[in-house]
Length: 186
Image 1 (cartoon, helix red, strand yellow):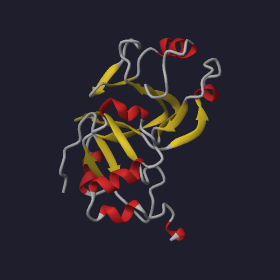
Image 2: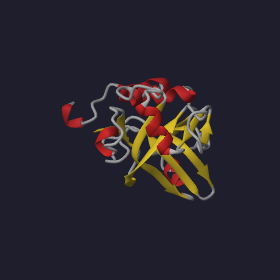
Image 3: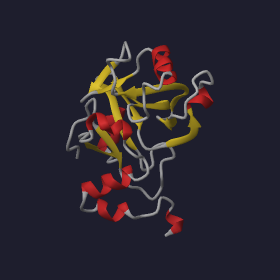
């Protein structure tokens, strides 16, 4: 049963599973858009072994790159909380913005005017067709929660993010908070 309806700015928490979905196992996804046409989000807790300068050599910065999801993994996306500095940003909710003028972002990074607590970069995104996310919710693949971190989610540590959400959900989820990601380690 769906308790909270999906909406821009909400978090999707992957339901615990012994058989892990390669893309979404133990994921926390920020919904950047949700409409009758579909949904788009970014996985907030799956860092990759890249930094920004690995992908955009002219931008000399050690900003960590995250796996945003399985769609268009050859494209770089970003969310941030500094719309006054980055033109053409689109508000997701609660002071979190998506995209904007990347040439301005590059310049601001070069001038040390942006920190990793203000912007997060992703390769790819998570996308669902019109009814697909609702079907996954009905199949209990996700739990929807409000983003209580609001814009501070951008600087949120990824290491224990999913575990923290399991503890917050309580009840049957508490057991999963300490379960190993690979059940063969148990």
